[in-house]
Length: 124
Image (cartoon, rainbow, N blue to C red; front, side, top):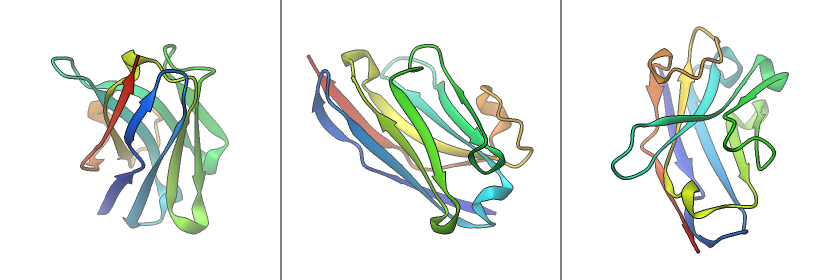
């Protein structure tokens, strides 16, 4: 079992930055692939980024590549999502998730454990 808690969301103007954190407890952080997903009102939950193999491999959605950076701190059992050049269309609830198969998949159904989410709102 693993428990995930996100933090760092908030309200920011377009062009601004935020850093989200995902603190993991339970099994060691580097036993899983970790992912970030987001869900905007009225839309399906979508993949944002994933990290695996202790940070050696990262994967991004096309919509955030070059603006967002996923990273992890094994000592702190924490994953981060640095979000720069934010756009109004980035507004969503952001979730972190853990995939015990370490596939690094963009498919949310590969992830067994989820946090409660943190709201990110980008104003124009």
